Length: 461
Image (cartoon, rainbow, N blue to C red; front, side, top):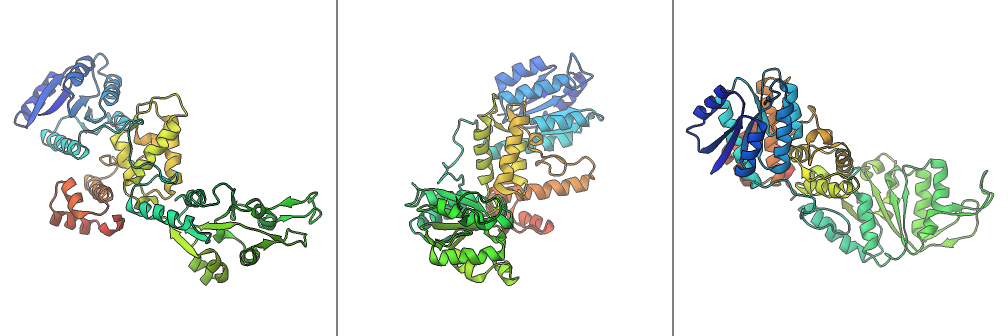
């Protein structure tokens, strides 16, 4: 049976809720204060809790209710806790949402509204399988491959690509938005190759001043320029018998592109200020977030160099197109950064997971890691709330809307958000997405047209 715990010190409200929910398919339990509520919560393990924030002995503020909420979330985070607040208690309600409450409603209680909210909460429990967010010592999905975390179809293709190209010495060009893991893929190719025992040397072509790039690449002889007091080997020489990784090669100035092309053709260099030709044996990998074809059209990148470095190429998917990988990665980073602080962090709250799934991640994996690291530092709770990840009113988690919006705007926002979430979770599968939201396929298609959502954008195929 589905159990509901109602916690309120006002006898009239308890009687009202008892009467209003008497014909519902739920087993009702009632508590008047935090102590009684926790005793029932511990023994019954209710799926849904309606919790008044103003509880005795301090009914005039929310301290008792908030404390009770924190204990419930820590003990059984899968329970959906709906907080009850007065007309002027919105700040406390928002705090409760940040701590992991499922939703809130204001007094006076609207029984019809509460019924809908409870029904949605139980539906959500069914979708989640009544399971709490995983603890950090539990399995979280596929193990990293070549040090890269990913379980979606697109990443499976990346792993297969790495295995294929690692066996050769052909140059590889890796495309991808900033933060998608281009350097990780280059490292994986190197470590899977026969050169794994030798050095992987990286040069960030966009981070070194242009007047120093040639020396950084090829080294210089003593006296080659003012300040050159000794002979210095360049990065290319340090990569001898190993792998040279040219990151952000699309930022390389044209004059250096000519010299790099000459090196790739002859596999030999001359240090700046030197005359001796030095033979080099390296494997070259390159990466860019620049549209190379557009750069060639504009004369900003040499076509002959492109054909030298792009013998084989691969496009890395942005995080927003990787489905549930975003949760795998969030948990992976929580494992890494959570171990560095003496805190008992068990995982993310359901609202935080919603926000993680729905956020577009313009900074990709790098941005996700930064947000998780920030959350680990800021959180004081067992389960990380959306606010600790930096999600506020500008990008709310599912079920949380901006109070300044009209009801119609809020409903539209939440409707669109839930459609996107369902499509992302099931990678564009209309049948599964519509079933998860409890609507028919024709209705689901009508909603997609209404919100101008293309389900193909969520597919990894």
